[in-house]
Image: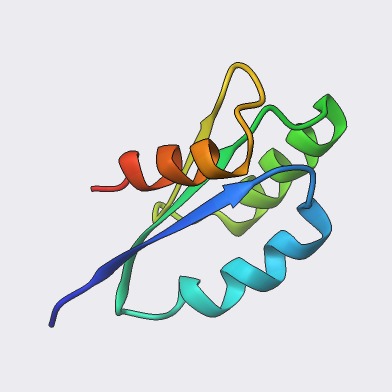
Length: 83
């Protein structure tokens, strides 16, 4: 079976993150979930890390930009970090 990588650009939206990821975690078609944070606030970064730690899945790979690069560049980095 062919699989896909799910690339998720993230910026200060932890309250929606769990809904986005839950449907993909148990899907065998999704081989990895790449989350690329665009220098969110420290509070949102902590919430995102807490959610990912609670999900405890080796499918999820988390990356963070040092500076806010904007939506387009963050999407590009999310795809670039995919295998």
